[in-house]
Image (cartoon, rainbow, N blue to C red; front, side):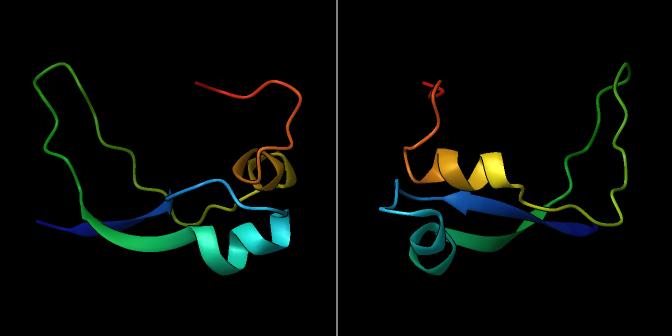
Amino acid sequence: MPSGSRVIVRELADSPEDAIARAMTLEAMEVPTPAADEVVVAIASAAVGWVDLIMSSGQYQHMAP
């Protein structure tokens, strides 16, 4: 089965810079097998944006649960 990658945020950091250095890791993952009514889309590249960084440091105005 092909593999992919995912960014994992283990804890909130003190700043966006700290989030990159300490709280985020890039981990390998298995690509899921889709059900009959699902598809898997291959992503060639992706990025972590500024909102993602400030959310990972607990500084975004509307925090997700």
